[in-house]
Length: 277
Ligand SMILES: Cc1cc2nc3c(=O)[nH]c(=O)nc-3n(C[C@H](O)[C@H](O)[C@H](O)COP(=O)(O)OP(=O)(O)OC[C@H]3O[C@@H](n4cnc5c(N)ncnc54)[C@H](O)[C@@H]3O)c2cc1C
Image (tube, rainbow, N blue to C red; front, side, top):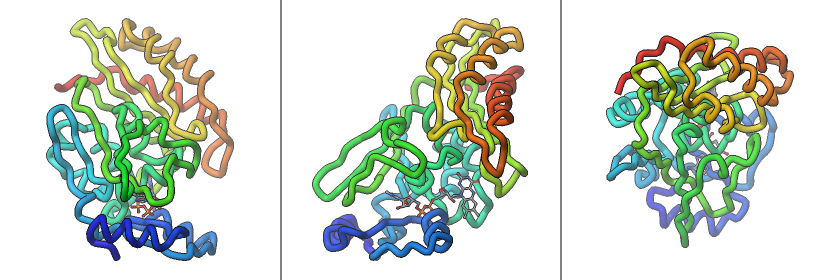
């Protein structure tokens, strides 16, 4: 098990078929159920260089191997990334949050992944490292489809980077599932909103989970809402636009028409929010 990045690059070079894992809460379950056996598995768990949450200037750096439990309790996350704290609390169960990591949730690239919609509205960037290079990619271009990401062999996600500005008064994440805990999102929505003293939306970012092949953000809905009142009247036309824009599928957990309806109506939850800065 590599402990230092140089050891990791070495094992990756020697094993071109190798697959990395962190908490194993997605990968090991898949390996068992699909009876697939990669030629070599590399555990990242002991690489301390890719752990911890720090802040520098206007940016927050979250180590790829940060577990969900560490995220929920971290003072920087609690103060500056309330949205992430809320979403992460809704993920899985205590044992899953103890083992599962932020990068694991991202690279799994499930449209139901609980940290993803928040990371989309936060315009998060991923730092991707290999032996010879470090690059940054916006999360929206990194995730290509269900289970598909822009990552080459020899590269790993090393950090997740989020800017502290602009600041938003309202941080909202809601997940609709078949039950409150240990359930995948049937539909989820993350929102960051600023509202003026007279209740007008001055800035809004919105993203939905489980209503398409990847997390969906509709810039047209965001621009439509800016300048409108945060009220039923102000939001009702946007509810219609969202229902027209999403591309949900029917599956065991819900029908596409139910998902479409819920995706629109989740917007109405923003009414009555008290902003806190
Ligand atoms: C019972 C149960 C309940 C769950 N509930 C939820 C839930 O409610 N919401 C939710 O979103 N998820 C849920 N999950 C899924 C899972 O727990 C999360 O997606 C978790 O964040 C995965 O992290 P991990 O470290 O365990 O990933 P792993 O299983 O270790 O890895 C997952 C994928 O990411 C890759 N990977 C991991 N780390 C890196 C890295 N640093 N760089 C490059 N690639 C990397 C691996 O190669 C693999 O493809 C649940 C899982 C279980 C078993």
